Amino acid sequence: MPEPQNKLSVRRCLTFATGLVECLCFAGAVFGWAALVFVLKEDRYFSSLCVNTTRVNGTQTLDCSAQDEQYSLIFTIASFMNNFLTLPNGFLFDRFGTTLTRLYGIFLYTMGTLMVAFSSSALAYLLFPALSFLAVGGILLLMTNIQVGNLFGSRRSTIITLYNGAFDSSSALFLIIKLLHESGVSLRTSFLFLSACSVVHILRTFFLLPRNLIPYPLPDRFTYGVTCGNSVTASAEVAANGEAHPAPEETAFTKNAPVKQEKTFLQITEKYH
View 1 (cartoon, rainbow, N blue to C red):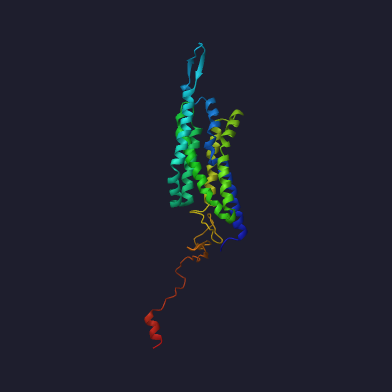
View 2: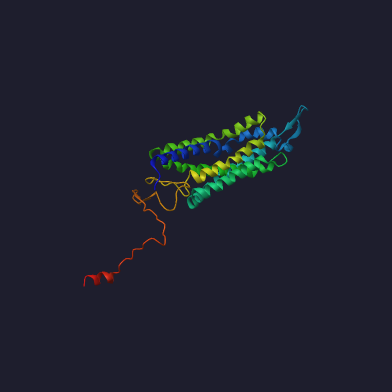
């Protein structure tokens, strides 16, 4: 049987709340790169590029412009990959649906966090693919969450803009990591924690989001998640004119079920002769 209306409402509220947390705390973290650079400099990433130079007055200074160029290049490549892959990611989302797209995005995001966690001053070049993975994985998280607005009808635009705002605000994540680093929490610990949070993303993918897409306009009593069985379809078919019509229930075929044999046209005509 279809789920009760109050259960559907609770599930939709959980989907919205967890999606907001996901966008606010993870999706756009890459745009807080400037705060993370302070941590990387303290941990001596690319410090070998700093050289002593002599000024005109004869004083010795440490020139780290080459180091700064590496940090800028890392962010530039990540920003490029984020924008360049937007179209392919959109096609991936439309073609394969929510679950596969999110699993791909979570994989990239987790790989990015693990690369940062296990990087060091000797393995500083791991930051190049790591930040790109974080950028692309984060935008995929946002992309698959935007459709949550379709669950709330007239509030759809509000939900979408709220998620976009949360995505931009998530740049504060690296600032928090910087403050934690100043308090004695290592960079590796912070990013291993972010990697572990991928378990939450995966659980949300299967329990609080549909396998394919959330349609708009939303069919009556639309359900999603792992509790949706194959025996009963609680969703509705949406006609081309936008009207929602209840979908027929699917019942499993068994050998013991009676099968009604349709009469042929010849049998019908013989009955009346």
